[in-house]
Image 1 (spheres, rainbow, N blue to C red):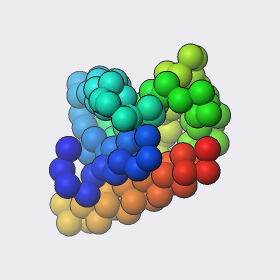
Image 2: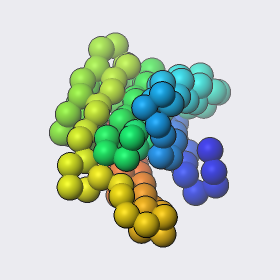
Image 3: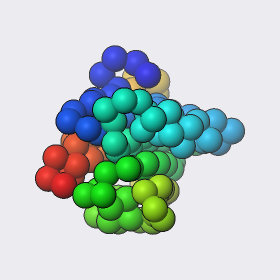
Image 4: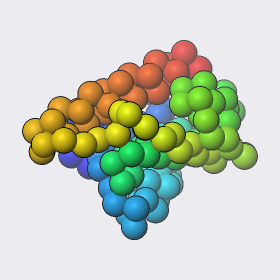
Length: 126
């Protein structure tokens, strides 16, 4: 992942996979699985924009204080989880990434920062 697209604090990792095609959607859970297996990481949250109009999130957690189901529903208003593995897909509707290349980059950066801030705050309070 590019510099600035992730953060690691305490025992959690939050990463932005970027703008992905529908065929690349499977990279999001793969990345979340990878990061949670690293020493010192108990919870990973990886998200990306799929097809320009869907926010896709994957949560993996071995930390009993982090309820993946509650995280998905509290932060994203959607999704669910079982035994430390969760996901959410949110239709971005009118907030879908579109326009000129420059507009898309600005929009993508805004979405990334917003989501990362919300997830980090949630995990910091857990």
